[in-house]
Image (tube, rainbow, N blue to C red):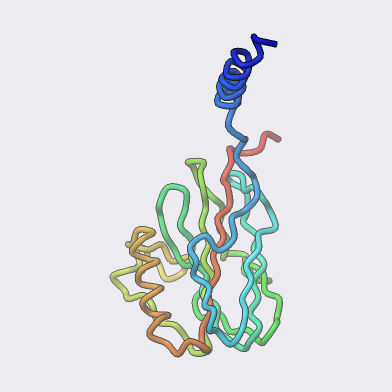
Length: 191
């Protein structure tokens, strides 16, 4: 039994080394909900934003479910895995608890398919009781293409988020809410 005090530190050292040598867990394919912490705890209503496909694959059509628990105007933005930004819906009027899909029914031209590189796609839904006028002509890249339904922006992700936060925080707290989701973007699926 005299060898037991010598063996215990050796066993503890081996256990520590073995614990450090384990591989890190695989990245989750689940979306991260409201990672940007845009939700408004003083809002008079909730908003939800969910993806039909998780994870997303490069080239797949995006399908999102949107809802606001009050009559409001929905604005849907994206920050792509490459850092590009855009607006998918602009002041889209909805009734309280009306289920809305993106792209909306009949919106054949209004589509978004994620492009390379793989990474994280971020989507932001802002619901306001009055229309939100966040962007000016200089903020929109494709302003000269009036038939292009998706507005590509001249803003990077942090600029878009700062502008959105500022515009929302100037409104009365019960009159707006927002929600964000980040979804992993994987390589294209092989047919």
